[in-house]
Amino acid sequence: DVCLIPEIKFTLPKLLAHVRSILDKKDYCVLCVAEGAGQDVLDGAEGATDASGNPILKDIGTYLRDQCKMEFKGVDIKYIDPSYMIRSIPTITTDRIYCKVLGQAAVHGAFAGFTDFTVGLVNTHYVMLPTTTIIQSARTVDPKGRQWNRLKTAISQPDLD
Image (cartoon, rainbow, N blue to C red):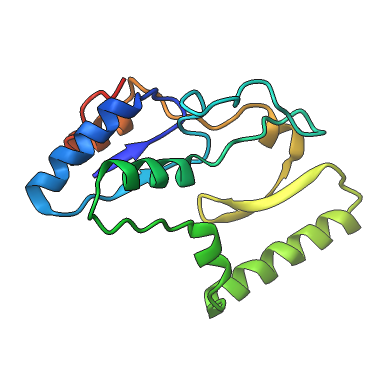
């Protein structure tokens, strides 16, 4: 019902008003929040970095949960952090095979004398990629792009800034 990403700014009052309109229509609302979204909404989120220079992100999920609990009295609020869900289930056969193939490719690359590389699946092919290629730029969503506009249209999400 609502998708929040780092590339798109939002204000808490507009977000809560939109959630309220969704709750009025269908008695439930799902907020999907990407890592890094809403950092400007949180207090004191600017400037902090870890030892590698990566920004230390505040937990927007718990913040939004708490704000929704205060705003929507009597509504059952569920907060699910998928990282815990993913780690809590056993692997399936395809996961094991994928990890085995990636591990074998990494060992083959090391035995071949390669350094600073990673292995992955690109267009159904297992490949070795230079680490510098992987980290040269962050993956972002184009806020004026087709994919974002399709998503906004599909869920009828207004501009929330």
